Amino acid sequence: MAEKLELSDACKKLPGKLYNRRYIGGKHTEEKNVLRALKQLPKNERKKALDDWDWCKKQSLVITWLKTYEVHVSLNPQKLKKIAELRKLAANGENDETK
Image (cartoon, rainbow, N blue to C red; front, side, top):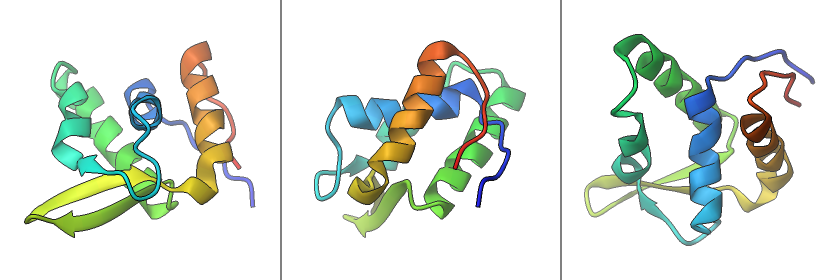
């Protein structure tokens, strides 16, 4: 099922940040470390990026765990193709259809 979804540029970069640091599968980091990149954004863009981040979690692109009383995240290794598409869109600066 293909769905048209326009993700914010900031949200497209967050999975790329996890990918570059190789937080895939069992290796994880605290969610606040990933979301720290959104601090410099204006309030309305930050809200859109957080909504898109929640969409990424619902689509199982990002796996979450509760560890040490904090939410930890890593990329879902079974969804790396979809994550690669998001990274490509972020690199091109485009909003496109995701599958």
